[in-house]
Structures are given as structure tokens and as C-alpha cells.
Length: 125
Image (cartoon, rainbow, N blue to C red; front, side, top):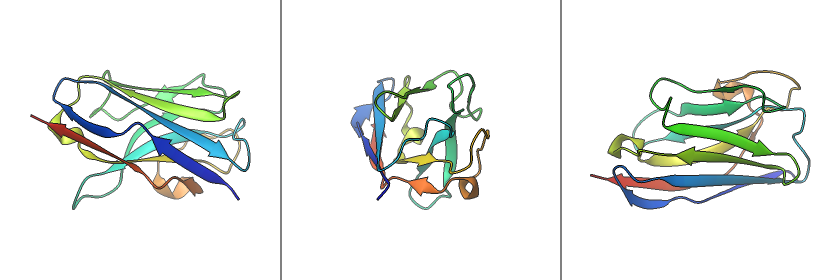
């Protein structure tokens, strides 16, 4: 059974940093893109960071560009999200996702087949 398990969420103040981690089990994703999404209360799921299979390319929406950084460790079957200069509007449940297809650069939720259960991030002003 494939599982993605996120960790690292918590409550912080504006300007602080957090590092989220997602460990995969049940299969490896060495040839697959991985990503982070988030969903704030009452809002749609939002793409926040993606990384290609080999880590050569990372991509972000303007809302987090320059503040968030995604990375992956094939040896640990893990993807991480470093979040700096956090803002109250970053408050959301953050989800890790993995693409089932090989070699793509996905950013839409329907392109990802595997999802974690999420970790809550709360940023207070």
C-alpha cells in the first residue's frame, strides 16, 4: 500500500519559518514529480510547489515564490518544503502529492495520483 505521510506543521508567528516533510512508503517515486498543495478553510486546493523527478526543476506560484523552497531526497524517498517569511495567509492544511506518470512537470491536482492526509500550518499575525 502506497502512503505519503506529512509532518512538520504547527503554529508560528508571521515572519517565522517551518519545514514540512513528506515520506513515501510502499513504492519509490524516483521517476516522478512530487508537489505540495494547500487548502485554507473555505477555499479551493492550491498548488504551492513542485519538483521534477530528478530535482532539476522546481516551480512555484507567485504567491510563494522567493519564500518557499521544495527539495527531495531519493535515498529517503522524501520531499520537503522549506517555508520562510510566513504570512497569516499561508495558514492552511498542506498536502504532499506524487505524480504516477514518469517525467512530467505537473501542477494541477488531477495530475497527481497519490496524496497524503495533510499537516496543519497556522500563522498568526
